[in-house]
Each structure stands twice: as structure tokens, then as C-alpha cells.
Length: 402
Image (cartoon, rainbow, N blue to C red):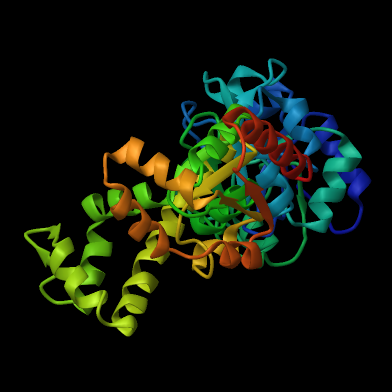
């Protein structure tokens, strides 16, 4: 077999693939060995030429996000979020496979990886042939992945139909593979795209509303309204307390800054409180440490939620304004209520005295603080039903703006 070298004749390369041949093609990562992904016989040649085990499935190169609907089924919103963020680019997104994809591509499985490469020639080729291309790296199994057309030729000259020369590949590392067919999502192969960027893109796709206000103002009712609309509700304080029990890196940082604050792997809250509550600089240092971990943990929850199709979430925190978490929010809603109503709720809910309830309330931020810093204000100064209707109306407006 004589291998054609193609530089600019995309139509000729498309013809090779339409006729069931094999062509090496450039991507931004490494060169791939491409065949018509809907042609079982063509795909079989990839396995034979590479010596690839039949139990290893193949990914498909596609021209853009529209391929998610064409070659996937029950595709989550998270897949579209990642395609919008990183395609063309070094990310392979695993989705449930459409029935048109031959079993040989899937190696007997039910999922398929889709990738839109950041290579002008290969994108033009995908559009010209109108086919998804099964395309593993263009090397014998176990050999180094080729970054130039010459390296491909050294492997497969005379064994494949064509090599499309797109110059050297810029990245030189395979794509990252992320599986979005399950929750939580999984990174199946860490490649050129960092996992942190995937997490941030998924988390950033969720409309995130902050709910704040003093004790007894009615934040719980507001959060119930959001939850009824399908929003994920996150308690920032609960996230922090969970991290204090489970995050060794967080405890290590706290111990490094505040020696003696962690004993036998457990945070000594009273001992730490004696230090930070009498020293504003120490309290700022503690907040800087903890909020970094809290924001990361919330982002991870949001990323899992987005990967499963979630769109809206709410974060509940009394101390929200002016923290790093505030920067992540699309809107901040302050819930305010008259002092007498707040006192009555605290006495009924927690069994504290009226005097204690007033002291606790007056030690918190005044209403004017929330009115100055929040995007929206909800006044809880009527019946529970009136307040719930006000919540529903405001949150519907906020979420419709997403």
C-alpha cells in the first residue's frame, strides 16, 4: 500500500475516510489514526494496524457540540457546559452512546467518548466528510504517541492510506477524559486539560444565589422556596463543620498557623476561639484559610450537581458579605424581619430566654448593613404565607435571568 501525504487537499483526505480507509490526522495534542466511526470494517482496521486490544473502546472526533445530541443519548447539561467551555480543545467527554455507533467502537460497552479537536485541518476534514471519526493516537499500542507527521510515517508508512500533515502538535499530551454518564463525574484519564478547570467550568455554570440575614429572620423559609423550585441548597456553616471533621489539609494549615489548635486530629474549637476572637488579625488569618477550603468544597458540590443537569443553587450563610464566597455569587438576597418577630422565633425554636435572644440579635449586623450590600431584600414582616409568596416571586425572577 502506498501512503498518500496530504497537506491542503482536505477533499482527498475526506474521500479516503468515506471509502473506508485509514488516515493519520493532526490534533492539538498528538496525531490520531482516523477511520469512519460508523463503519465497523473501517474501525476494525484501526485495531489491526495498531495492535490495539479489542477490549479498549475508541473515542470519536466530532466537529462541535451538536454531535452530543447526534451520537449521545440522555446527555446531561454538564456535557454541553464542558463542550461550550473547552471545545475545540483537549477534552474527551464520555456520554451514553447512540444506537448507530457500532459495538466495535464501544468495545461492547454502552458509552462513547466525544472530542472536538483544536486543529484547523482536522476540523475542516470532519466537516468535509460529515462523519464522526474513530481516532486513537497514531502509534502502535504501547509506543510513544506521535507529535509530527514524520513520526507517524515511521510507524505506519505503507500500512495506512493517508497522512494529513498539519505540522507539529503543540500540546504533545493526550486529551483529558471525563465521564459524565454518572454522578459524581469521573476523570478517567488526566491529560492536557487540568481537572481543576473542568470543576470550575461545571461549578460556574450553576446560577448561585446567596441567602443571608440575621438569626430568626426567616432564611429557612426562603431556602425552602428555592428548593421547591429545584435549586440545590448548600449550608456554608455545615460545609465548614464537615471539613473540620474530614479535611486533614485544612486541619494541618490551622495547626501550622495556630499551634495547639488541633490535637490527635481533632480541632479544639474553644482553644482556637480564645485566640481568634480576641485578635482581629488572627481571626482574619483563620477566615482566609477556612474560606478557601469552604469555597473549594462548595465548588465540588456544584460541579457534581451541574454534571447531573442542575442549573440553580443557593448558599446559606450569615457571614457572607465581604467573604471570598461572595465573589462566587450571581445574586445576594438579604432576609430581614422586625426584632420582635425574630426574638419570638428564637425563643420558640431554641428554648432560650427573651433576654438572651435580644442580646444575640443585637450583636449581629443591623438591617442597614444588609440593605446596603445585598442585591435584593426580602422583608419578612407579615404572615408566613405572605412571605413565602414574596420569596417565590423574587426567586422566580432571579432564576429566569439565568
